[in-house]
Image (cartoon, rainbow, N blue to C red):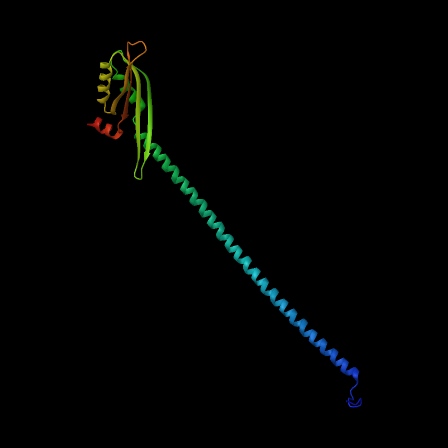
Length: 199
């Protein structure tokens, strides 16, 4: 057992010394926490600064890409408009004028034969290489007899603009005096017609 007189230093000094140790340890801990907080804040601030810098770079590139896409879409639309215009002009250039067809259909009519209806039907067939237009004409009329119908078919077959002239039907009308008929034919290729005319 320790004797009370073995320790000649007063207890207040021991208590003061222990208090000073606690204070020093607290100061060190506060300093460490402060340094860690400042370091984390500096690191976060640096990260935010880099993010803002990258955001500005990304925004600049995004705006540039948007302008390029807009320009690309505009050019594609212009190209498509030009293609559509060329296609329309080409189709007009490759088609035979209706006025010329009507003149040929009416000039070859036999005596006492008339046309009651003329129907044009255009069909378009597109392939990888080209677009083909087929124009069919349906004629409805009245003739005095079968000989007039046959003569009209022969006359149409001799016209360079027409091909595949065929009789669809021929029958007596309600009065039993005249013949109602229907003839179908196709309009030939304009380029072949032009070549034939030039020769």
